[in-house]
Length: 275
Image (cartoon, rainbow, N blue to C red; front, side, top):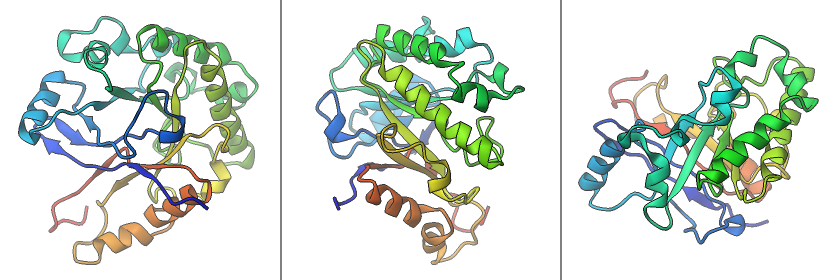
């Protein structure tokens, strides 16, 4: 069994910058990539990223953006950052301006306008395949064909619109839909995406095997970790690691599947606060 590769681990906080990280799978990377990579979410502001780089004293070549609130398929297929955004949010230009830069795209599984229907079953049956292909074509056309796609992250969280569901049938459909989305996007000429299946640490502690889409679809296994809700004290990190379906569990799960680990979101509350 191969040793676990932690491909991205970092947390930052500066002005509008919130600490996140993103993953690249070295053995499948279309471009040379370090085995570990620290990335930043700058609230979609290039100026904020620049201020963070200044404080850090080093350039940041990996950034996370979100395309997870589009209501209509047309907006979902053509993410806002590919549609001539204002200069401070032109992440396509930022990506193209220097070699080695990468975008991590947090992407909803379906357009929000579909969520009132039986979207899991419809998607599992192939109803959305062309939407995934169009999205992939638009990303490739924008020069983002090597991005990491964080597809429907934290779907074990009941507050997530892309939640996996409750019944065995809903969860099976969700898994099938996730895999179909990956297959459709990979089928597009020029697409060399990597797909990150990312869980919410602990909430809800649903067994990973129950909603994992399968090794054929997943390039990276991720976990979002926050320490709010845990009593302060020297045992706080141990509790974060050891609680059900949390850090230790996802590390073991990734290692068993020989998948690199990402920590796309993590942050700390003040030590005197438990939530």
